[in-house]
Image 1: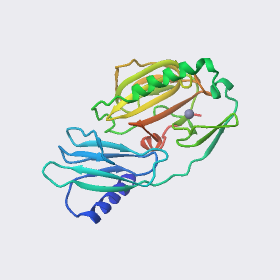
Image 2: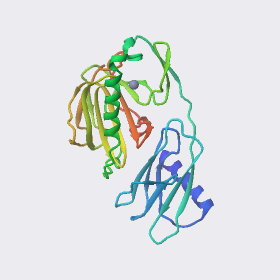
Image 3: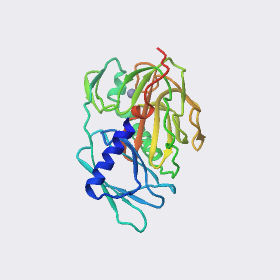
Image 4: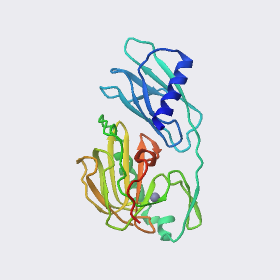
Length: 275
Ligand SMILES: [Zn+2]
């Protein structure tokens, strides 16, 4: 359904602009936090609001939309020897809930001055890991849930921590017992594997290619090493409550370049659930 709607939307916009048999397929929705996976004719170049997007030698590419993106973005696809095709995508807005989390250790909500340098250093390392731009297209065969359990937190929700408004939540939280295996939702290369970051505790980042990455937070153990190639379903760590957490859960986040996107729609319905 998701695929069909997106394709019809894209075709309609395109047809309105210039009818042709141009072979562009888009899978996904132009919605806040959403991703669109594209298939262009081999050899095409693609830009997104004027910014060049990585395209594989088979014509595959991905684009994403941030939590607060709005208005219309322009996708331009140029197949060698043909005029540039211009597609306007109107970003659908979403409603975000307010999530109140109480009982967090106060030092994790308002860190003491002596840890600010550590937090800054760790943020730089996370940013460097996410900035990698491997040409792989390991996202192409879809995503599975890295762990199953009760969904206890959602992308985009406005957070009020111990009564204080804080930054929105960017992951999907899966609550499950400490030690529950966490597996790679899609193949990729591990770009960060840290047992103890201040906010996120045990943390692993997997680069799925073309700027799309997954981050896994609060792990009780990290079972991956930087540079390791993982297959979908490989163990990468175990659920914990390390860093800023009130109980054991996995916080799964995704980034496309500098945009934070929502992992939840990619993994779809959770088929097996443990309480
Ligand atoms: Zn979370």
